[in-house]
Length: 221
Image (cartoon, rainbow, N blue to C red; front, side):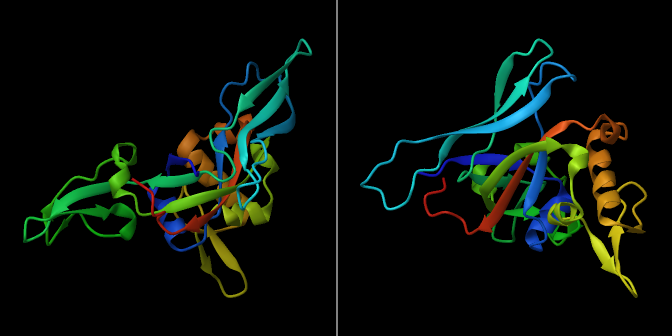
């Protein structure tokens, strides 16, 4: 049985999901004992094979193995596992139409919060309930790397925005809000806009989750 877990995305990244531009996300590895600790490998524990099942069992625990300054190993479990179904939490609003029926509106749709249904305040994504979820992602791979080890192709897979120039794509700078940089610089500014300017230089370890967008599962909620 698939496990359903919530995941938060900013409004620009929800837009990237809607446009099918995003199939990868990076999240900080929490629980590292010291900045001097070194990542060693990924260890994956799997369920025992059940011959009555039609498909092979998926992993139940993906752990990053680190070594501290004393040479001691310790493990940090990944929040998301291969096969997990992630329901996206996004900035939203609960509104009523002319028939007094409740419906959800989403900021990533680009609508104004001062329109036909009156004026309302957007609710932060952290407060979005499961019943309001409209985007679902299935995790396909999990790995660990340093933030600045990202490749150009990975930066594109992160869903960064771009415009087509005369001879090449011009990528979005999330700090100055203009276009003209390359893929890696664009992702750097996206990361800094979320985690702070100094976060890029700190070059932390991150979980790298690849995923694919799927339809709403029948057994969700």
